[in-house]
Image (cartoon, helix red, strand yellow):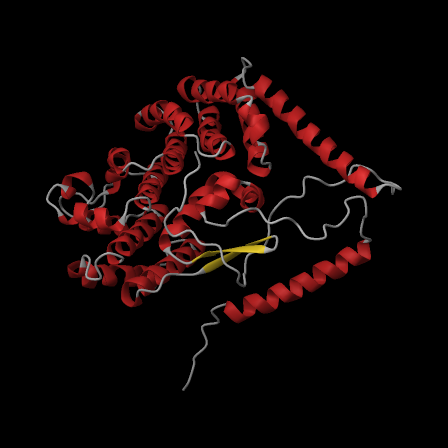
Length: 427
C-alpha cells in the first residue's frame, strides 16, 4: 500500500530557478498532417507505448543471457525505461521475473551487473507503489552484498542507496528502521576519526564514496523517525549504542573526501532539524564547536582542493551554517508542468535528492504521473494537462529559435536576481 504523509513533503505554487528536464517520449513518428488529429494523437501514443514495451521485453530477455556484458546492458536498458516511463500495469505482470533478475544479478553478477541490478530494485518498487512485500524480498541479498568486502566499492555503494530507498519506501516501523541504520553506520564508521583524532589513512576515494552513500542512506531513514522518538533515543543511555554520537559525526567533517564531508554536513543538519522540532535546545552544548567547524568548511580556500570541489563544499556548508546559527533552511522550488514542489526543509530536500539519485532526469515526469511519488511529497491527485499541443503539428525552425531565445532570456533574468554576486552592500 502507498505510504502517506512523508515528513516534510509539501507541494506549493511558487517561482523556480530549475528547468523542466522531462523527456518527450511521445513525439509523433508521422511526417504528414492528418485530417483527424485525435486519431493521429492516439495512434502516436499507442505506437510509443508499444515501442517501449517491445524494447523492455527484449531487454528482459537479454537479462538472462550467458554474457555478463549483455546482462549488464539489458539491466541498464530496463532501468532507463523505468526512469522515464510510468508503466505500473505492464511492470506488475512481470514483477516476479524482474525480482528474479535483480536477485541473480546482485548475488551472482560482478561489477556493472551488480550496479545496475541494485539500481533496478528501487525503480521496481517505485513503479508498483511501494509494495512492502517486494521491499522485504529484495532487502536480504542487498544487505549481504553491501556487507561483502570482496564486492567492488561501487556495487556496495549502489546497494546502500537501494537499501535506503527500499526501507524508506516500504517500512514505517521504527523497530525495523533502527537496525538498518546500524548496518549503515557499520559501513560509514570506517571514516570515523581514530583514537588520536586523526583521519584513517586506509580510506581511499572509492571507499569514501561508499561511506558517503551509507551515511546518506542513514539520513534518509532518519527522516521517517518521529522527532520525539529521535530525541528520546539520542538523549538516553541506550541511544548511544543505537545511534552514532554527534561527536563522531562531527569528526567526519575532517574527512579528506568531499563526498563524506558534504554527506556529514547534511546529516548533521537533518539531526538538528529533527531534534529542534521537539526541543529547541537540542544538543546546544555542541553548537559552538560545530559552528566553528562548519564555518571553516564554508570559507575553505585551500588550493590543494579542486576548484569545483571548493565551490560545492562552500555552497553546502553555507546553508548548514545558516541553519545552525539562524534556524533557516534552504528553500528550492522544483517546477514540473503547471505545478511546483517546494523543498523547504532538510528532510524533504534529502528525500527528493535520494529519489533523484535513481530517477535521474525522469524525476519530473514521475512527479506528474506517479501517484506514489506524488503521495510521498503530498502533491495530491494528478493535474490534467490543459490545452495540450497536438502532437502532429510541428513548429518551424524559426518558431523554435524564438521560443528558445525567449526562454533563455527569462531564465537569465531570474537567475541573475538570485545569484550571489558577492558585491558589497552599503546602508
